[in-house]
Length: 463
Image (cartoon, rainbow, N blue to C red):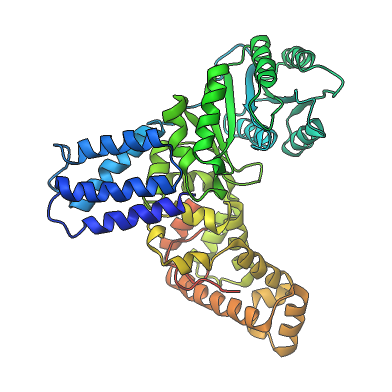
């Protein structure tokens, strides 16, 4: 996410590094580039105008510290204003209500609303440890009810059965009564979407809102629609008292216009952001962390929190202890590290949050994708346990068997073995405990340039 915007802004900041001071002239030159970058990112025009005006006022004012270089000072101002535009702080869900606290989900068809209901249910079941019931009041879309039932079963939350023959009003009344009877903490109601905003849709969801009196009314919108996402959210907000927005499919949006426009246009906070298809790919929206990502500074706090949630801590601790004692780093260990990275959203997700990754050559980032790592895992899975523990025994016939079993080439296997050797050498150097401590903190992920990603930046695998 934000790839193109990050690239353009980084280029603009670099042009300021050679200047002695920030002046109105060089600020205006930089702002022209920032404006162009925001337009390309599909940010809404009113948002761009307000943002540029505020940055201009602050950058040439008294707020620039003398200890900073012009480039650093300008970045500081831009970061602060990005945070202001996106909402200053994370807006948590307000679940302070007599149970069940009702969350009403609204949005257009195709925005990923039903999937987001499942993700939100899983999120609430996790850290807040809430008991959750979900219900579908979408009696129009074929298989909408069955889709939510399948999601509820997968994540282990209560599902209230409804039927296409029922009216949405009857469904939500019955669901509310059942949630009260079972003392459920949170009831999430999935509503019908449409291909466009229409009067009948608005009338129906307004009626459901009146019946349920929800503590949260969340608008689910596709981030890839850019500034149209903000305009659609505004139309819903005019008809319905929204309390917040959830941006979906943000991992597929390289521009970021929706994230930068929604709060300014609707006045409602972005509460969550969907960063993938899996049921755990829903993150609380932190404006300051997103601003850091946009400016190529990474987001280590989110990365550490993700590791805390998704990494198997027992396995990570055992691995750290093994390295600390100077025991060998075999291919089974290598496979386990690949799995841990996949659990954390894959390489692209990790790189997006790592500071300094924006400075990598473009070709380096493009050469890394999760399919390469899945292929590496397939190669290791085709080996016997003896071969994984002692890869030195791999001769020509063993290699042919492994590549046939994994559907790869001998060159792929040789490249994997070479990268494993590099990581073995690194682990020997780190056996004193420095690497182990890092592994414990980040679940064995490693560090940029230090072999955490096989080959390290600049030496990524190219299958």
